[in-house]
Length: 132
Image 1 (cartoon, rainbow, N blue to C red):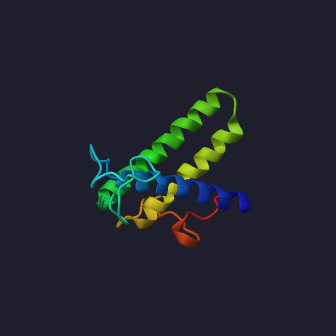
Image 2: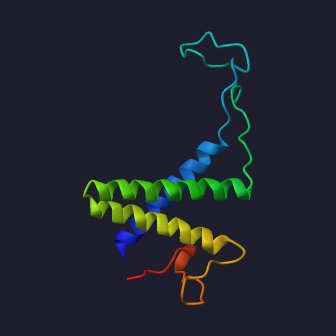
Image 3: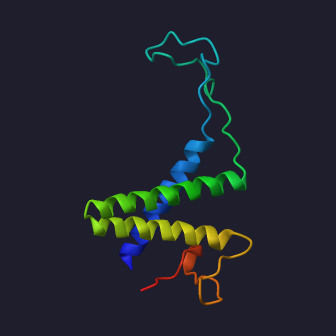
């Protein structure tokens, strides 16, 4: 059970980090205000003088980012298998499955489990229940 929780935490942290990075705005060519003459090079004078608003991502943008994370995890898992590191590959696949399950749980039409005619089972927090 603890392994699954650490996998979920790792997967969610990575996905949230990717979303956070996508919201970042590229820095402008120059500082927003006159540079400070203080001890920090490139700093601007005034609290928040160098701050800019973050990008607003649509639900489709966030879904695409999480899907890209899932694809990256599965690709990395395949590379680990090729290197004979099956345990690490299994951990990455668990993380990919957790993210996939979370997307399915938050989508308007839940995905069906092939061959059963039923939707996926979910545990606490919208994550899939243990499939052991």
